[in-house]
Amino acid sequence: MKKVFFIILSFSLLVQGVLAQETEKWKIEDLIDEILKKIENYYSSEEIIPEDQILRQKEMQKQLEKIRKQLEILRKQKEYMDPEKFQEEMEKIHKETIEIQKTTQELLGALKEKTKPRMPVSPTFIFKGDTEIRENDFIEGDIFVQDGNLVIYGRINGNILVENGDVIIKSGAEVNGDIYTTNGEVIISEGAKFTGQIYRNFHSMAEIDKATSYSRKKHRIEIRYKQFYEEQPGFDNFYFEFERVSGFKVGLIFPRRFANIIYKPISVYGYGGYATKSHRWIFSAGIDRALINSGDPISSGFLLILGGKFFSTIGTKDEWLISPNANTISALVWNNDYRDYFKHEGFDIYFDIYIGSKFPLGIQNIKLNYSNANYASETTKYIKYFGWNKKRPFRENPPVYEGNLKSLSLTYETGSFKLIESFRKSGIGVFFSFEKELQNFNYKIFTAEFKARVNLSKYDNFGLRFKIASSDKILPKQKSFEIGGFGTLYAFPYKSFEGNKMMLANFEYILKNPIEIFDLVNFFIFFDAGYINTTEDKITAGFKIKNINEIKSDFGFGFGTESMKTRIYFAWRTDKKMPPVIVVRLSNPF
Image 1: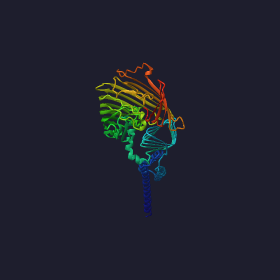
Image 2: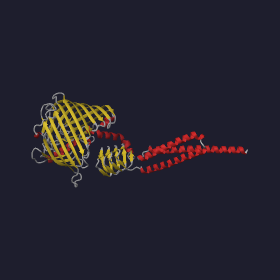
Image 3: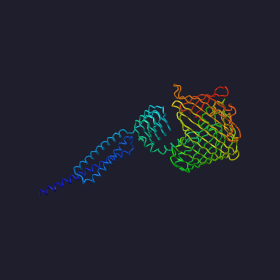
Image 4: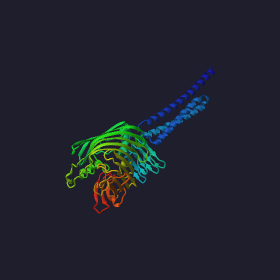
């Protein structure tokens, strides 16, 4: 009887030991699942986690998966193992799991405290668009960059927040502070020094970014592509312009936006308004149809557009001399209307190609355009606008060829020059155009232009423009080349030289804040040279200079605001002794 009792007792103890081992094993597996679930839930939340913390958590995940596999192996080998050895291995695994659980809880607790909603930077420096910190630049303070990439060659002591852009730290650069991004990446080159933490998709802005991510991406595309479309007068969707022929022109604009055609196959654009002095309605309406749209529109895209527009408006050939808004202010305040005008009615049909490759100069644009337009002269309607300009009446608007011109043109443009918003940035612009008139004049026109701005340091900058244009025929007024005065040769009378062969060169050197008492005033010196000829000959002919005096030139100095968009020029001619010509400019010179 006793023997039976001992057998039952031994069996009972054995069963309890086995069950305890099984229970212990399942407890460990439950614990592993619990820890992994906590980590997974935390990653899927709106919290931001520094990269070093993510790496530590991922390492723990790997260890937990390794422990799970060990448990599976133990379960298979249990019947072949000594019970004591089995229990020893189970206790070892349990201990490792508890340690991981403890470390994970500490990390998650610290992160929850660290990532409470807050603004990560108190920006000392705020930039919009692509921004570059040069090699010799040293910034003490926080930086905020909106809608553009931040490229760092120099040194920054402070936090960085980049909204809708990337942070790129080049070799030799140094950043002592944390980096926060929304809709962007952080790229650190080998040889760069970075001592802070990286926070991607900063969560205090996360909800805003989610709601506006589509709009932000569209806006970022517009920043890159805006250089390729015509600048309209006014602001936002309000069309407003004043000039001496039509008076005030007031209406609405629906501007051409490339983000629209990228996300939709069809996009419309245009403007319409009323000219108060001409007593007529003006309009332009266009439509784009994307035929091919592939790849990323900024880095690797290819976009082919078939489009057309029809118009009845007041046209000008002087867009390259001054922006419409700056000309409106100049005409109203000083009676200096630097554009000439003509009635322009007709239609255009075009193929527009945009290549968003990693081409060094940026996005490339190729356009083939057929134009059928009627032209008519317009006369100056205003002598003055404000009473203080009685002694300075407006110039007479010159007559043009009146009739129909049909032409086919091919243009190529690339570069980032037009995207420069400060003289402290560098950029290059390249433009080529060939136009063939198909009916009355049968002329051919070739135009080439190269522009560059070089940031020599954070205190000085050099800019230049070379432009050459040539035709094989005598051109109608609305197509001829004119230089002299504002925008070309500042010391000479406005548009004092005209022809069908032209060369123009403009140079300027800008020095930032040379006099400490004027914090926002920059100083610059400039030199301009130009050549005009009239001859019916091949496009490549007509540029043989027989006398150095055929080249007209001037020089001078001036002062400008911090952005250099507002300037005052003091210009002297080199061919004769004359008092300086003083010119005020409210837009970039080229």
